[in-house]
Length: 537
Image (cartoon, rainbow, N blue to C red; front, side, top):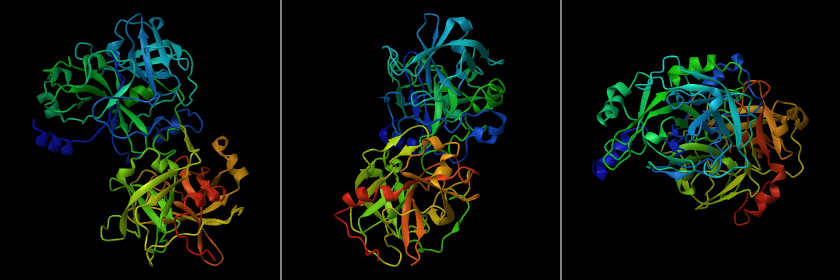
């Protein structure tokens, strides 16, 4: 296959991510934009949940990869090492606080007392003081597993004790129901690979007897095999651009990975086996069941705005796709959320100003970015972001007109508790729907801080955060970084908050969390001295 054909091929297949934790076994991951809620959202009432934490949140929001790259420490905190007797460890994936999902073919002949599971480890070759070993109480092999062909190659390990989740140890999300080395490596690696259709999979050399109704296939057709026999049992995951991961498969066969091997790799899909997994893990504690709706980009409800009545709202695009919202505060700077830019490449980002219909290429203008200023104390964990604020400096100053104007900043010390506010953006129209084509707005009320502290996630709030709510309206995925707006008595708009995080969208008792801008006025003005502000009075 020549280079031109190879490029055409990549454009025609689903672009995906695969993460390999290579060490006779590895962990893999596939990337796909998330357009629906996680499967656990629909069953949350049937299973116990673990407070306000979220599954499938990586400890790093990385970019796309092709070819292997060593991961950052504990980047994928659901990966486990399974030690069977004295054999080299095999891979497993933590799916809740009590169960590890792995390949049945790796456990043939083993008994529970012979197995130890290591959680929280990164380097398999050196002692990791942050890791711990947990014994196995029970092995549950999939009842229709066939070891000769690796059909239904799944098994569950019930641990002897529940796992306490923290930043280095958390679980991956379960999916929706329908939904280059053969040598030892100590550290996890990841590589990007496309999913192949059945015909291409078999054409690559996969034997029909090893490809089943519940199988999937990954690889690059016509090129050297990148997944080896030592990788069998590792996990295949979808990753949304928000950094939320679903486990969708376990590798069930690999290759010799010699120079002549071009065979793709087959994995067992999780979707067809979800009922079995859930029936056998009823006593476990799942993480909220809101896999794609937590931290990160979060207007459910609300209405389409009259075009250009909020001329300070901007759209932040990542490779021309809606990424986040923002607000124009002067002729040169856009205010947005820190998590919108922390893991993005500046070269991939643009800012759309003067827009109402983001699909209308003739509307508004798109401006390149000169610099990103992330708050130096920005922090992110599995649930929330702290000091979640950033400034984007545009390459060229904005020329104001009727469709493009800056918003006012708030007055230091102002208290907006109980006041009505507006939030606006192009994010999801419904909790499980897609992004809006047109700018939408919703009316919310600012909640007293102490009242917000009494919610289920109150312990994660800081004094520099504020809460706003409505029973059926909220910011949602795609609205992150957008402003929370207060209309003064003189009908001028102030931006008093930045959409930051929350649990779900417009869920009763779950307000949205915003950066309280009155606490950051000094920081904003310090970093925007080279710009021109409009008169506030």
